[in-house]
Length: 354
Image 1 (spheres, rainbow, N blue to C red):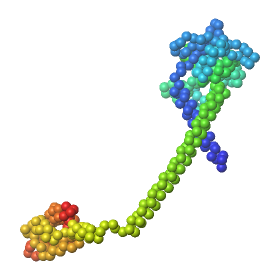
Image 2 (cartoon, helix red, strand yellow):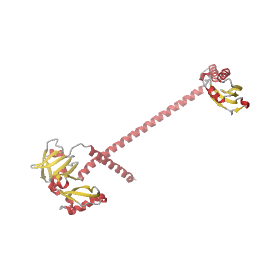
Image 3 (cartoon, one colour):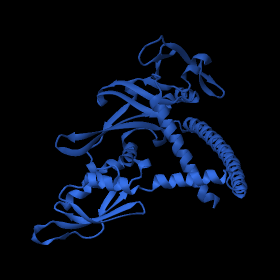
Image 4 (cartoon, one colour):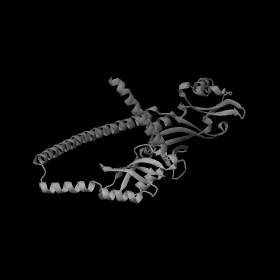
């Protein structure tokens, strides 16, 4: 079970390291440094020539070749370095046009072709290649291979590699056969592995701190939640007990005050028949007369005859004394065009609510 959980964590950490490494590569603003052979050693100069060149010399020692002076060589650490070499040391060959379908197999094809194109041992060859279309209407691929031998400058390459540069490449200027500059990258897997290993340790440490902080925060939130819940429950219990005590004591008002308040409330809530009839007389049109009127439970029910039954509801609801006017029975038409008999109910609004 641990292995099934461990593998996704490893994938996540590796992906995060790759993303951080790519972001670091894009965000770096350092111009590459060029190491150029000079009469008395090597000159280190920025590619844009923004500052004077520093002088280095290759010194043989028991542990291998190294660049001196050490303080000037230290400036090459974690930098992008272009080692400028003579163009006549580069072998450039162009392969016969290849089918377009072979693009995904170019690495294998080129490694196989190198054995017959270069005079050096396969394990000593470092190379680069460019791919171009054969022509405007020809989808075949023209591959140009640029190769050289590591042993030609093994000591210098080893000394530069020992300084753990971020990127090291051989640069050949103005190569006629290639139609311009050619760069061949020297991949130092050990230096890259060290850099990625340090980054991986940093990522793991940061994740561990984040997880620990999250655990502490969640624990504190859980504790705070429990404390708050306990306080709310205690307050609810206290309120409940207080309500029980007040209910047991009963109302503290005198009986006369309670009776007066009840009578006043009932008076305000009960519609007065006189004012209700007066309001009806005000809103009903002259061609309407009532045959029955009943006031009960806060409602007035009227039955009568009118020539415009549809207009009664807006008229009644337009008066503030009434609301929710509806027909409680179907309207019937009288013979000889005498009008329609209606059955209408409306809620009487008390004076306190108007």
